[in-house]
Image (cartoon, rainbow, N blue to C red; front, side, top):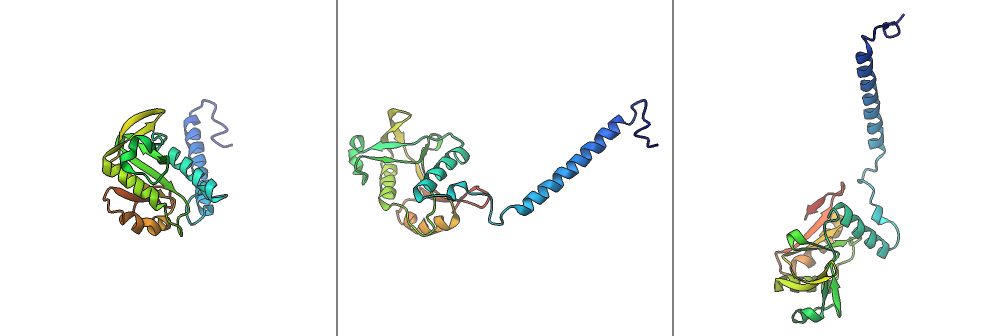
Length: 190
């Protein structure tokens, strides 16, 4: 008869628990290895890549708000009236995807720009806002003086960032940055 079955005084209980934990851990590791083998070779799932162009952009923005900005940024709405000195190309207002208060930084998220270019007027308006040093903007429902120290474009692919880098760099500002998400959804500066 096995020692395990004949353990009337419970001396082997700790050893049995350890053996079970080791077996389960080995099974979990084997299962994880099989799942990793079945992962697509071009990186993790990109949920924003489905559907129409407008839907992809909205989904990418929502994904970035949650996963890149950790829900800590807010939309910046710059109205033309209180900022008439800027002569914005946007007739009534310019909306950023995000504004990160602790860095005084505008963030704009771009999905599917591997062949297309960003809106030059938006880029010029952002440059004017930053060059002015700040704007009167609506944040959290209130009109506030808002400093803008940098503008950041985050593309969903390196190819999109490379395709738009020259246009952004030609803006002449050293405070406009081009970022992209790598295959593991990590933000990288181009």
